Length: 431
Image (cartoon, rainbow, N blue to C red; front, side, top):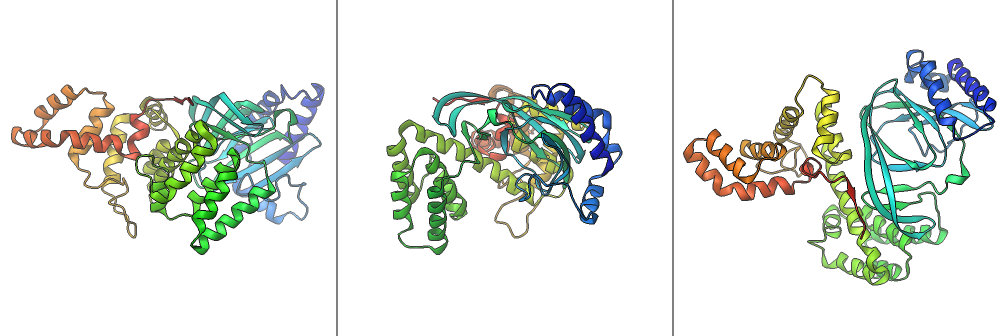
């Protein structure tokens, strides 16, 4: 691919003239991408076609395909390389980088979120606990360019809205001064995903075998492992258990208000072993459960607008931010009207073969529930809600509805799918 070789050689010359200073490499890479205009010269499909047809490819930097589906290296020099990453699934993974450079959207679009992480407690060199704060949330479309900085100054996530999406990345091979390269588990946990402890890996494989085999003493062995495990290994064990147990057990496991006797024993061991640090796990897994529930909804929705709505709910907290992104995507529409329309459509969408009342996941959702959601999104007080109810509904109906108002409001507030809209909190502290 001539255009990729040209931009690679151009970046190499510019960077060499600056003595390979990594602090200015992101700006050099971003400017080169903007000036090259690659999305106007080559398509994502041509990259795939060329890769299949070429006899000898440039040395591939991520041969196993850990980052991208697939990642393809199109230019490779001694200090940096140029890749195209394909994405077939949206990802909510929040991470920092041990490299620097810039990326450009080649195909599709993404929700880009950029965070700060304020460290409150260091568990060890590979695990930290703290507070996450969302700084920027924006839509990225074809041609948009972002600089990539190494380390915690650029903690971000990209949720890819289209299938596939593709990005061009001009990046250094690695910046050792910025290791470890943390991944972040909302709302409060940072873990190095590349740290590998052979003993823990083998124990996780054994636990998995016990669970899948339904061994009668599985819980006993898990408890014994948790009694000796360090904090990072405990996170891995609980995550493995969460991944393999049946869905009803998962739901009970990580809801503090309804723990099963079985999993309560696991958590008691963790609390005794790690004290106040054990508070991290329910918070992390509760957030994962919320996101996974919305992912499950999105998996059986095909309408592009509804999928966009659910992607916002998975990635963005706070009505104002969600409304802003809707306005950016649909500039001629009112965000509140779009949310209400999407909610109604999801409530009317039946899902064949799934044990859910509708795509919204809320049983018996009707016009009155939609009325309450609208009132919440307008920040109406209880008095204003009742006044609007008496105004908009016939008196005999209003009287009956008023009797159910408290329960209906609670149903809307507790619905997982509405929590991102109704929660304006932008950061979570660890006490």
